[in-house]
Image 1 (cartoon, rainbow, N blue to C red):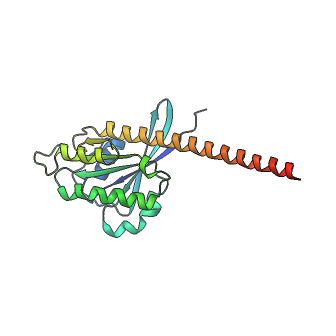
Image 2: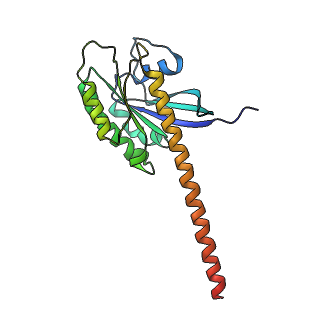
Image 3: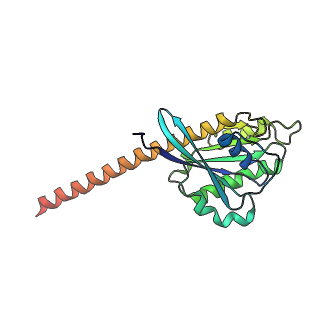
Length: 205
């Protein structure tokens, strides 16, 4: 019998046109197409991987970058274990938007511990010969925002894509394990507290 797989939910956020769908197609299907097709609302692909000897099913949510779909964010972001922020190295505007995407995610997803929630920053289209965002500037921003892991990637040439999403999966698994540990501790503390109250009540009767 195969061991049951953990399911990890990873959200991909960024402006329209930065290549979120292309990155997922490259990572999951090892495919790339130059034809652009805007994501409507959200879509997700899944991939089965092994992390630390544990079979894991990754649910990779590709969300629309258009403003008109923001109202759907809460239902898409809820329950996420990791968030990947994507910008286009050839578009400074898309890099400036990363902070807004991060803040919006935290507001809508409402993670238990915002400071500990795992984010990754990806600068896509590293194959471009001209750029508007330097590696140094993006790296500085990532460091200033919770020492966020940062990688420049290329969906077209498959540069760093497998590695970057592998890191996202590892961070998601660490968070899931930490969350379970905290829940067990809180549950134990609650039972202990309840038991103590019962004993005190008995003494007073």
